Length: 431
Image 1 (cartoon, rainbow, N blue to C red):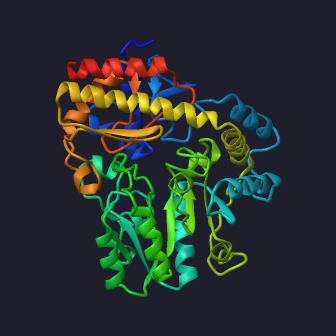
Image 2: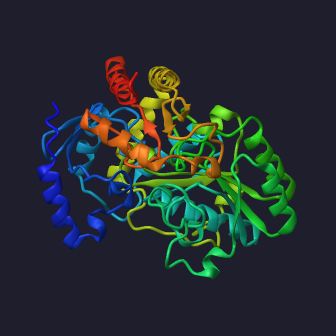
Image 3: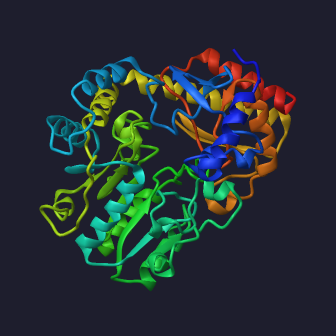
């Protein structure tokens, strides 16, 4: 059902702006980049999401990726319901933390040990601190357009909403001292990486990368790029970290590292490891992780880390994914259908667009030519994307309200959903 009313969302947004900066608790929800009002969501179920005005949308955000099994999955919901009656949080050790740790170590190739945290930002921040503690070095290399959360040292040429808002990718409030140890290389450009290793020889603690970039839009690693990163990190005894907040458990049960056959030293995860709950994790080789307190000297703590409700949700989702490879067959086939269909539409319309995708995630860029890095992604026509977004949401398709994000397909989406979305896109492009 779609009535295209937004009255209640508009009223809620106006009220929210009096009490919450910008009316939202995360900039990606603001809809500023697409020139319209945020939809205030009341519920979600399976492949659909419903707003305060009673509009029903096909959900291609899925809480920004973790809803691989669909919204409100019965198995995950049951696990949460059975857990919360015993208490929401204890601030103490529980058996579920062990179950989760064992499951994560079984599924993720690089994990020999894991520490649970409360968000992807906390995971990447903690992983880098651990890498510095392990190596005794200060510098880290990140890649332009890759977003690793909002900790101070990583808000340097970052992606996500920082691009879409049109301002400087660097955040006010980040001091020069915080940023000075963060070096930036170009995604898919090994020469830029090699130059940094040469210039800062012996002082690079870690290289952190989204193995498939998804915060400048979806940008795939070119053949051999991840393998070459593995080799140069081995050569310089530098810790290689895969940020799998987006790709973890989505591209394969073991994430991008399983799909591409390149094993990092450490990896980080966000809400995807908890079935959409506010949770995260970082882990890797035993010798590195044993640098973390209370065993080692790298301090990291969290009262709610490993809380029982998040662990129950995560165990339910990860167990389902581990035991049901048909989930990946389904979401990947729908991905081919959706992104392949968009390619056919833009070819027929003869417009300057390109589609990048892998498995169930993808981005339609409003730019001609290949998108292989931050520079080429930024050539996108943001005004045209905003027009596309507004048309598609008015016709019941809930996309990310910014060009530089990913679309996500869940196991609950159907071929009929994809066909409906493609039909709407075809009309927009005049095909």
